[in-house]
Image (tube, helix red, strand yellow):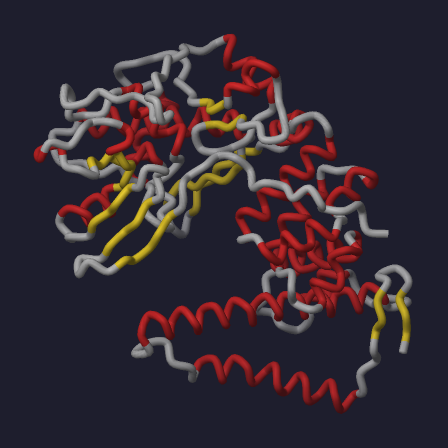
Length: 429
């Protein structure tokens, strides 16, 4: 038995014959999985199988990380961590091996997570969130991620909520409300393009900081809507039309409005009046958090829109006078949603229509409380497909199949980060 002081864990040597048995068992798993049923077991059975597969996948991710930790702990590693993790399995991309190596490094640096990763209680998605945050922190700041409370959050929260918790923790550790991250993101923005002779298509690749991405995204969406309006035939707001809009914008062919695109920034009143606080909302319309300095700059060069709230805090009611939602109502809807409201749909809200829950033809009001953003596919599913939706007072959305059975419940949308428990505890020793 050997104790590795770096990882603060016990490493148990394995006998050669035990390695062979373990390898044989692992290699047999793919064949066992292929023979498992994937249809004819009912929705409940499929959900059980999917949940079990996710647990198994998380455990395998933890096992891969554990192997990487054991390799890193050896006295004289014969190869870099990512090369070890790639091994002889040439079906694994170098990028995948490097990602696994990054997970190993993260688990070794954050000792509070090591045992949970080894045990399979914390998976690869959570380690990826920690790795992204750790990259922009120095050694002292990184200790803010190394807490038992964050380990518990990794086990209890969905992956997306945990990612938001990690970003919130990293922002607090930096004590600059995300400014350094914003500056780094701008420096790390990239754009490249090339012609691919095999597909005979021009291709693009790149990344933009949230602010400039929002500008580009808003400009393209506005151009897409304009092209759709100008078309004499029914036109879908899809990727093909977005490509046409991008070319029109870059080459100056876009007719109509000109100048700086309108950007939606959602800020809570307390932040706007008194500055950032623990539960600040400082987001673009697409949900990207920006530092207070960026909000201040937008406020210097912005057309402000007054949003009138009713007694329940529901914005912009226009009653029966208009059937189509006003620009102000769209602004209010975009402050609530960044995509189609249908469960699991990520189509951007700018590609959606505002659906009347209680149909306008039958007396429904054009009020935000009666409007729900749905993409074209799910809008058709509600009307022609005979599905139905019910929006509760707190905007919890219930979706029902054509036979009337409940299909899903989507909780109240919010831009607030997940609440941080007060008893997170200090950094792990």
